[in-house]
Length: 536
Image 1 (cartoon, rainbow, N blue to C red):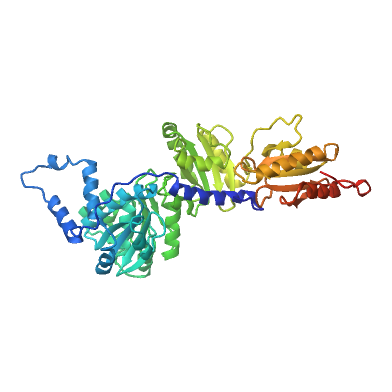
Image 2: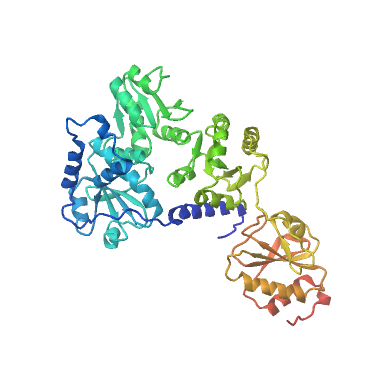
């Protein structure tokens, strides 16, 4: 992990690390895969089994069908998903026009979370009459097959179209998988002709785009279709009857209309730009998230890739956040497309801790508000009480550039009688940059393998130069302290900040012996007529 010349760019690196942690931090066991080598587990028999279960006896009432437990429903859905193995994978992919494949490993937490969403999507696609065959492969059990299918990580989703693979680029909820699969297999837009169809559509979709066109032709309509085909996450719907369209978006007043509908307080947002694909897609990118988005492992990549680069993160316990949500939505409503608001349950260590560590606040349990400017790689912390008014003032300061970038720091230590002074973020200016003396600074981290050796070497040098009043020795833990002028390439690092030229520290080699370092320091800080050879 490195400091660059812009030290806050560490956030970008740590964010990538965070995404990796989300993928590999927890090991859990998925359900044992069925014996996929059994020839009876072919597509036809699987579908026949489910068709039989779908046909309830005539004398069986509705109550009996409602008694299926969630586990039974999931079990049925999972049986729709064909388990691939060494024997059947090539045949299944070659003989079906569309195969959406999930490559997984039983120990992978993301695989385990995605599996039920994938199974639910399989059920929905079957109900839609989709030609997509849903399949899964235990890539750990069948590594040769996984390699041939280009499965390199877990989980991996691939769509095979007539045997050729296409990378999955959609979301990871069941609804998002269904939308992506239908778009890539010939249904980018659902046409709604009647009130009944509109009512049924509303029951199935939490977020969608509605387009109203008098005729399904012309340049505006072509741009709408292109946008529908290019977007990977949102279901598009179209109508030519204004009364039908009003069931989906009540405030439609004329044709050639486009709007996005979400199941949240800010439910309806109309598009007011020209009908060009790029403009429509940009509109969706800025408006597809809720006023306040709850971060999960499944939506984390979408959140990070949002074009709204100024992101405010609220860390709170679930019960505390309930009272804060509505006023926070009021603030977010005023700043739509300018600031993205994200909530993280502070109790969820996998999600909260990597972010809080960036601020040195990983042990915090109370509500915190932070912000990241992903465009400028800067981070900020609300240092007053997280009330709605303070949060709004904080956001206003972010937009106007009046909030100072946050650099984490440990508490100011007691350096009495210390031969090597402990420097923290808060004291870097006073002890290093503004000191009238020469400063030899060791930059280390607790996890650095070679730092202990260098620290002992610095202690030895400090004792050797104890009588030289123009030189002080110091050290800083870079994992817990930051400063905008701290520039580090690796750990450990040694810098000599010469009196009168603190803006240009001299980097010393940590591979040099104590004698060589002492000679170099002696040459740099002693007047020439007082320089002498140092023996250690």
